[in-house]
Image 1: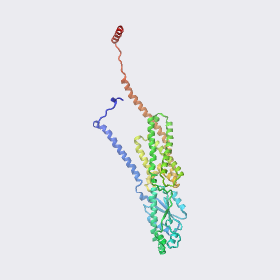
Image 2: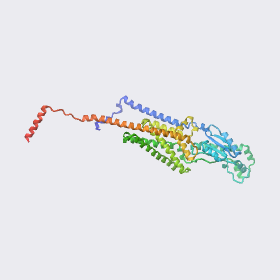
Image 3: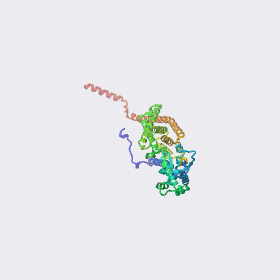
Image 4: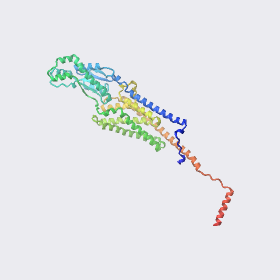
Amino acid sequence: MSPNNVPQRTPLSQWSAAQRKGIIIPMVMSSILILVLVLANMSYLFGATFEQGKRTHALKILAVDLDGGAIGSAIVGASKSLQAANFPTIEFGSASKYSNPAAVKNAVCKGDYWGAIYINVGASAKLASAINGTSTAAYNAADSVTYTYNQARYPAIADSTINSNIQKVVGASRAFYYQSPNGTAALRSLNNTNPAAIAAYLNPISSTPDLIGAQTQASRVFFNTVNIIVPTLAQFFFILALNGIGMSSGLLAKMRVRDVWLIRFTIGKIYGFLTAVTVTGYLWAFRENWAVGGPEFGKTLLVFWLYMDVQWQVLESLIGSFVPMQLIPFFFLTWMLTNVASSVFPFEIMAGFYRIGYAFPAHEIYSLLVQAWTGCADQTRVALPVLFSWWLMGHVGSVFSIRKRCADAAAIVAAGAAAAAAAKAPAQQDDTVSIPPRSASTEVTLQSDEEQVRNEK
């Protein structure tokens, strides 16, 4: 293009009011829409945490007295005194139904309860004999009560709500023991000359944990938050890259649609697997003392591969085709934050309408991960149908999406070719110099000039 064809730039002061208005209004509207988008999405996410304390009672803890003595009575009294809206509901199970510690732990493993506390057999008798000085063995208060919960299932809630409140029950049970008839009788029978008896009376009840899926590494807080977003971002950015490469190379515009679909289908499967390997790899690299091995690694890899494929198909069926580029930020940010909100906290302590999160892939994938790591909290009856529905709809939608994407690319190429042809036609016409026909006098003059030149030679 010659310098003469470059459009002249004019200062803003020379722009008309209509031109300025055509720039300012879209800028203002875009900023408002983006701020509303952020406000709406973050309000939804923060709403998941709103007044959670008032719903803590929705979390159930099982209590079983396998001893049937003074310590069990103290635990019962402490549990009833602490019951409130901001305290987990403690349900007392019968020793006939939960006849041993394994049965109690299994109730938590199945997901019927968030935690459990049970009084060990013979705990009250050991305490009584230690206080009156007749016991020959040292008394360990921690052997009286055992508690359990699934630490891999929402570890932030498990540690801050379940564990801490169980400790409150155990701590309060000491006061109830002292105030009970058993406690006053123990004081009367206390062997004042025996230091071990005095120590047993001063610390009659304590607890020992027996956790399911113990996770103590700090990175566990990322499992149902950041780790839900980042792998999906990898899918999103790669799909954008594929769209750009397809447009610039002419693949979308010129290649047969079936072949384009086959290429992208294959790429999606391979890239999803590589992403799953990457995610599982860094989880294992930073597992510290987390007691997981090869079987858990394989299960985690398969679960994340399924998650990556679901996200790929959803994004592939929408991004750059049915969701145009100018609307992608609105769709993708909303999609990401609603998925995170569905997995960050248990639905029991969230407002009722947040149970729509059952329909999002992130919640179901996290439930499958918990099961893969612990063998507990089986939610496959819900998770697999939901994930399969997204997976199936995504595969069907991607076919139509790729067809539309190819049609749009072909239309763009055709429009560009037409514009180039239209721009080239006037230029060719201007470059052609028309030669007018010669007159008779001009022909005579030219012939005489030629004869004169020959005579001179």
